[in-house]
Length: 88
Image (cartoon, rainbow, N blue to C red; front, side, top):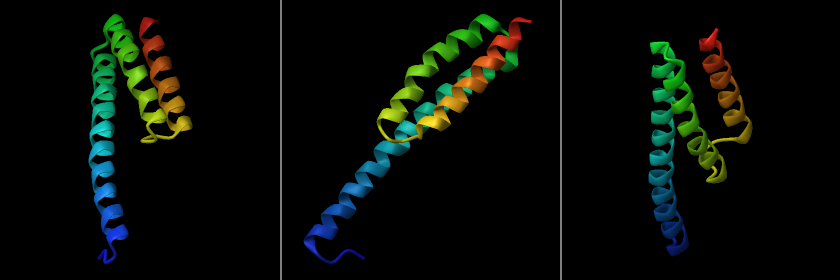
């Protein structure tokens, strides 16, 4: 348990950051789920639109430090190749 005033403040800050980051991760997952559902439905245009809207959210997650750059790059690559495969 935090004892000093500084450690108490850091604990409060960590709690706030946790809440913000949790909300960001949840928002990103929602966008990814929309892409997954569009791919599952087989609608290529809807999937492409969902992917286009998810892209900035994923990148924002990187800049805010919620997700790693390579993780997002991997997810984007895999999703875009799956959307592209719907065309065939």
